[in-house]
Length: 140
Image 1: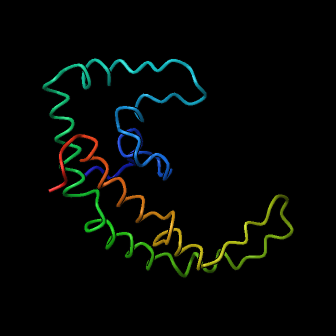
Image 2: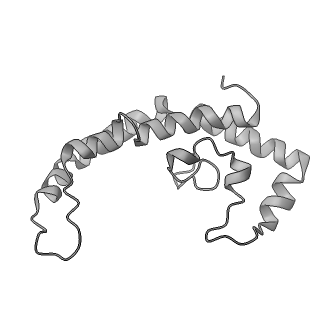
């Protein structure tokens, strides 16, 4: 298990990016410019054996780790652990601070996790389904 972020393989959480293939997403350059990723291009994409192994690793991750069946219970445990702190934090009056009051609510917190619509669990579900499809192998 790789307990880090999944940028440049599973996307950055942007729902529009869920269908972007890992090959295209990994080649994007912030602010434009020409992509230059010699390690990724030469070692992973251009070497057939390494590329096949890399895709097998992505499939293994989506099958055994990065999917709702595995991550939802962990997410739910984190929600339970921090929910009271989130509610307390949202209750703090920040009207004296400059800027826009985001008016967060505990309901919005839960919606961001569970949905409907754009949520953490929906993003995981979308990515877990799209990665095997993009590789050309249906999820087992």
